[in-house]
Length: 111
Image (cartoon, rainbow, N blue to C red):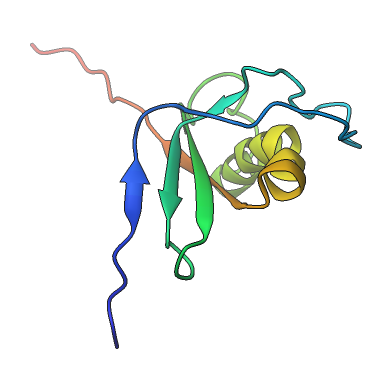
């Protein structure tokens, strides 16, 4: 299998401003200064552009405490998709990938 080389920009990547586009979701980010965490070329196929956004969350936080971990992960991914996916697909003509990372720290006392 041939390995494809992707060109990645880890700088916060500004999205194209909206012109006449009307995004259907009320939660969509319509701001002209909207940004995502990472953009890359040739991730899925040669020359394509993909935007990636990362959300780190604490699975033990009160807002996540009463739901199973897999549902908490999906909740955070769905929130990002509602905000950015339509704009990336329709305006940028690109792909959007949302990544969510679970983080928590165990606290204990030393005797």
